[in-house]
Length: 229
Image 1 (cartoon, rainbow, N blue to C red):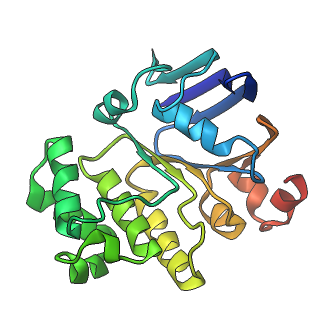
Image 2 (cartoon, rainbow, N blue to C red):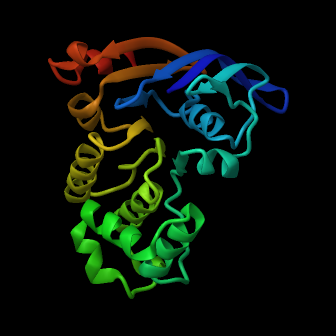
């Protein structure tokens, strides 16, 4: 599905990623973990087409995509959910979903139904301005918008960051639901969520992948991951 091979990424004169290799196979939920400044978000933005690597290759179903603009990748089925939780604040929740439906070329009613299947409670807020939602509700709306049109891949940056435990539980349930429906590459700091959902985990330090864990490596919980951060 997505193969990231030996990519280097630089901001100005500073190299941020150094020969990074990551694989996402169809049907997998793969996580990227690491401390702040490890290069996790840079990696995700590069895969999403928001940054261009200075070296290396990224392939999607065998075709090279590095340097392809994000909007073109979105049309090809690779969607990015950013860390900042930015919705169209002045529009209603319904209008936010409608815009996603128009962009994906799908029926609006089916798009709304799809988002509500992810989180039925959102129905209570359909006619509210999206800017009035809590951080957790905005994150859920963004993920919901991301799955409109049945993308092949979701790239999600820090879905639980800054959220209360009860909302993290909602995000966990949503990710669990999505696990059967879309391949996902996720940057996440909550190691409990990671260990419960991951098919594979890449640990990053200083712009490099330093360790890789498979699902069987994580059956004992978070201790092994914590040891390598």
